[in-house]
Length: 575
Image: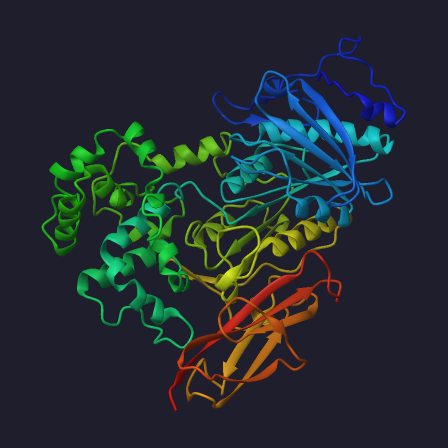
């Protein structure tokens, strides 16, 4: 490996032997089988990323004090940035984020979290696979050892990534050895996820958009709990099919997002890929038996009416593509059993081809080379919750694996703002705690809290109602209004709220709580005891939320404050 290490090494008082000095050349990283994923170890050199170059170095004070080292791999478009906290803070580890379209610039929160957790932070610009990330990890260890003058001290590394980054993270932990000691795949995608998850929702939109608010009202707190009430047979069948394939019923609380109503083209974003890989699909859809384009049924009538309305043969045909992409029996995809044998199948399974590309050739074997903690969310309509269970059942060393399901969290990383914050919590702190648990597990043998207990029925992941039974690391909130999840009152009438709050075993204690009585997403600190009273002066429907945060240390921190919430409905009538 050639490397241009300018003042980084001079600052540390060290000089590396320049490339070309007499030494045995390390072997190239190579696939174990022809056409298989490249296996990366500390002792091999990836010929695609053999020449890391440091472009600049800066000593910065924000977001925390650190040395920022920016560089690239010669002959590629891949850049990397290493954020090195002061030696007094560093505890011999690093955290590395991956995502296919990320930049090399880590978020301020990631840099500050790393420093607060005794880690330097590493990030590369996005591309498919894991080889670029592995090469950056190996080079960054060399740079860190020089900067910290740590000699032969072992450096522990942990890779994590959400959504598309979960494909890369799984590909990495299955096809590298000794590069990272552990990984945190987040909101896990699997080989059937793309494009099926999005097309399923687009098909649901075609049938259910006019009753979306009705479904939403049923699944929201204080609703009937039966989203099928009042639906026509074709609507009920479509909702059942969508639900059975994995769209969480609870996600319907935001029907605009589930159905892509504000961005109709978004759910068909992979349509161009299908046109390229399966160019005859639309013609077959509109001309051959077994496809909705020719099916004589109520659903077929809706599809043909949609064509008459839009005139776009591909856009109308694509949503039901998932019916013709049923994976083989025996691979664990039980949710597809309801479709099996009912529809003609296309010659190519597009999902696995896309997944393998994003994962760098990885095929989800379940052979993990390190500790793995999966963070998955129960209100995720992009990466369905059952995905994580599917992968958990493939893992061949379950003693090195944890799965944490989190309620009231969806697919999107980052802060949750506005009215959405009244019903959805950010999962970033959950990932932060998982990374800290992973480090303690790999470095000191401290076993993390047990995986979440759950069941999968009809495509839906369900968890126990109490923290002690549910386990995992997320606190559980049970909020009631007059002992129920809904109350009807007159304007000005006093309304009392009470909650039971608990943390799972080993998950710390509750250190903060806040009330949102209007559904605006603005929380005010809760008084001890998790009780509150309020008088609503204006008629309307209000969703009242109590949000809590748990800390492993037992006191409030800037990071790893694991949140959850619960809501109730208050319907206020005029006096």
